[in-house]
Image 1 (cartoon, rainbow, N blue to C red):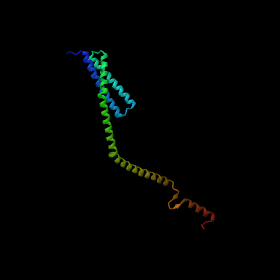
Image 2 (cartoon, rainbow, N blue to C red):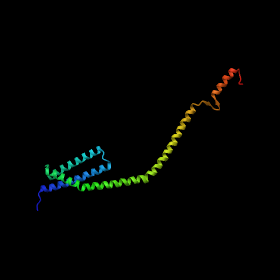
Image 3 (cartoon, helix red, strand yellow):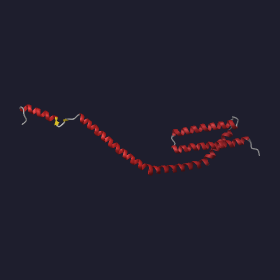
Image 4 (cartoon, rainbow, N blue to C red):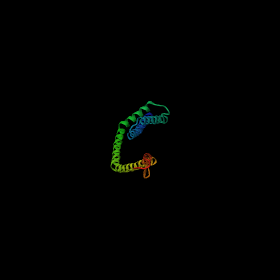
Length: 175
């Protein structure tokens, strides 16, 4: 039984569409991991469109002698849709379940293994920082008070002036 060449090109176009569906699923899984930032999604869609255009161009060059045939585009679209709504949905759902499981494991490891020592270390560092900053403040106060002292060693300045003033008024001595 002989199959027409256009039929084989259509089947290969369907396989190319399914391959593009696999590529699109990789981008969907990447979005699940990264959270789906709008700028990132736009870049991914642009990259996918560029990859699909290049793949279609290459396929038309090799299979259709450079001619763009409608049945090639229909075959690609059909292959993509068949993959996307059958196997693609299953793959993405399984990946979503695996991702939830891994996030749960990571959350448990963080809460039960990594967080308690992290809190202890943070508490110790906080106390060390408090002691150092408190000591530095005391040093600043000591330096400030040392430079501008109101008293001379063992003698108060204002009493000395008061004694001299009284001595001059009273005529020479303190009574």
